[in-house]
Amino acid sequence: MADLLIAALALAALAVVLVVLFRAETLGRTYFAAGLVVMTLAAGVTGVLLYRSHRPAEKAPVTPSFSAQAGLGAAARRLALKLPRGDRYPQAAILLLDPPRPGPDPWTGDLSLICSTPGKGDDVQHCAGEDERVWSADPLERLSVVARAAGDPFAGPQACAEANGVSYQSQYLELEAGRAYCMRRTADPRHVVAFRIPAFPVEKPVPTSLTIETAVWAV
Image (cartoon, rainbow, N blue to C red):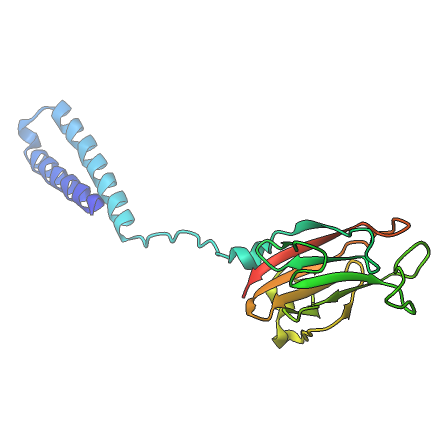
């Protein structure tokens, strides 16, 4: 709109100059030359402004927006769990909160992580010395379910979706170091916790701590 107004003013100036030039015989050469300069400038300004007023506006580049959850993934948190001595099965409990945290004791929580030795009974120490060590996740109180992830659940919750072939269970699940798993409370299925154990403890005579990585998703 401003460009059109300026163009109109330039055209008016051009008209005035034309009138003056028609009367040039009564004016001196200096006035005649000045009139030509003004006419030339007015014509140039008018042409430029009319061009700009009719040119389509340039569209601002569109920046694609991504969901923070989908693009960046969930922040992985390390959780150090204590495995108290004196328990025949070295174990720790997890509360599936946001963020997850250790249970108030090794036996109370939504999910337990337990070390056992195949072939040994309940009345002897497991995972001692050179014993074979098998780690498992077990919802002892049936307050949660656990499953192997279908992909990387730290990159997105779809790796914990049953629609992608994930099968949750409310019983013992043997674990592998470095593999990702999904767990959720039975009372709150939309609150999903991904976890993995980067490496199982190798300390002797019995393990006393376990470090896991977790990420929380609301689905």
